[in-house]
Image (cartoon, rainbow, N blue to C red; front, top):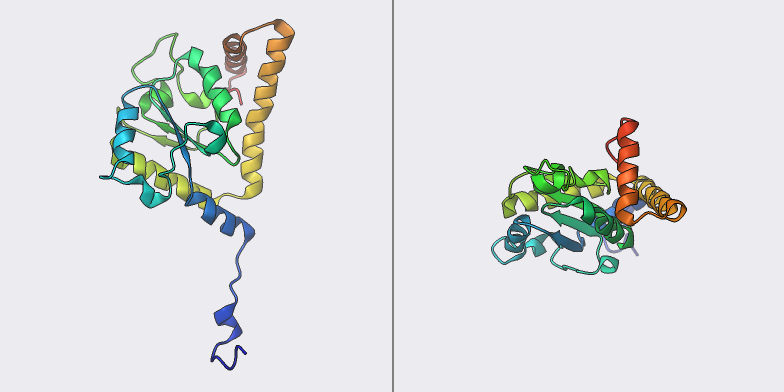
Length: 205
């Protein structure tokens, strides 16, 4: 039948890798959860509007429930007391999941070198892409989404699972610390951050 149609086997059969097919679908159907706390969230609203149109990248389905999203967009300053909330949201998100740190405040604490401000969200949750700026323009945020798509297209399913499992191990350690010493979520994370710093690490996951 193929020969009657004037086609060869090369014209009708496509071979590829499982990782490539799944990652192609994942990178073009990212559902963001915006965690906005400062001016970066205003720039994000501009990115989602018609002028910049995030739907061109398959990311227009904004979800404010962690169970219905796979991209956590951290937009703005995060205080130390917000760290447990951020970790809880990330833990509840659908897998696989990614994090984009938008702006210098989320990435490094920005101008807020104070005891109350988390000096970079990568201390408590895994970050895949950093978007610079204070605040970054919508074009810069779109560039961050495109960089994330590039990363998704190149990663393996096994590596992504191992990456997320590292966070869950730290989350279980946090809960065990809360139970054994009667600490609050904030106190347990603080202890983990201090222990990591004493051992020369900058992150707790």
